[in-house]
Amino acid sequence: MNPITKNSFRWTYSVAVFLAIIGLQQPKAKAATLSNGWNYAIDSFNDGVTDGRVGGGEFEFYGIAIKETSDTAFIAINSNLSLAGYARSNVLRGNINYGDLFFNFSGQNFNTANANRSLFGIRFADGNDSGVATTGIYSNVTAKSVTQANDGFSNLTGYNTHVRSGGGTSSIGDLAATDPYFQQTGENTVLNSIASGTKVGEISALTSATLSAMGLNFSQFNAVGSQTIGFSFDKSAMPSGSYVANLFAECANDAIAIKGEFEAVPEPSTWFGTLVGLSFLGMGAAKRKIKRKVA
Image 1 (tube, helix red, strand yellow):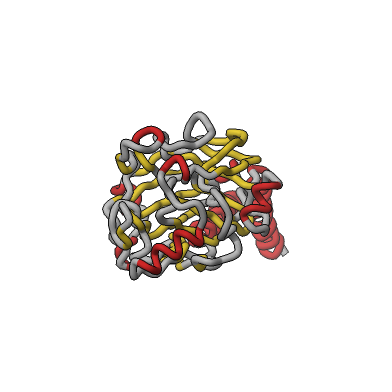
Image 2 (spheres, rainbow, N blue to C red):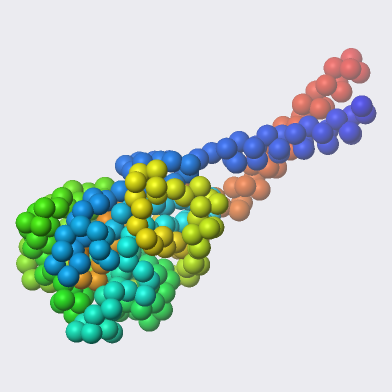
């Protein structure tokens, strides 16, 4: 093999090894359960409240899962509530839907982050009572309560008491039902909908078949809600680092939260610099061999 051919081979080999290593890297699990690249938080299976009944029913949330690649985040929600919502003639819009999904990277509790406009929010149910006009990703978010307009609980203490009296065990996924991350008492203190924010990205809906092909499997945790809702978004719309993400029904009849961490999105210049560095390493090795042969 001549020196030029060897040089090309070594550069190609170095790049191939680098890409293979990157391809084998898996997202990190911080607090939830990692399985096949998905980070899961599983909720209590008997803390949904539907028409006063505890357990099962339309408002039972079973789990949430998050997966990431270098530039994209994927969200999956397993519950009994469809994106069409639960029809009720006496509530706003005639149905009770999902609230919005909030991400908090600040390390503060929810109310403090809300007061500081540090929250990020995702409106994924276009039929809900969100204060923003369209589905998508929002930054500088403030949150509001829409439970009163949806015949729901005024606070988490009322919800937890009702679940307990009905024989259920309440939880909020990765958080305890009484975790001080959320305000527990007061009037209309379940902040479950975006009040305002700045749109910074779009979401793309994912089918159940697509999610399954990506390795999603809620049934391994016996989470078998009738609905699996999924969507993806560009990670550049949010910061990297540790977060708490949470979701309530608009009536606060169930809730779920997950703890995790987003890896930083690689800068294009970083990738280019790494590849160039590998190519020079390959060329240097080839030149050293040529010199030794000449000597």
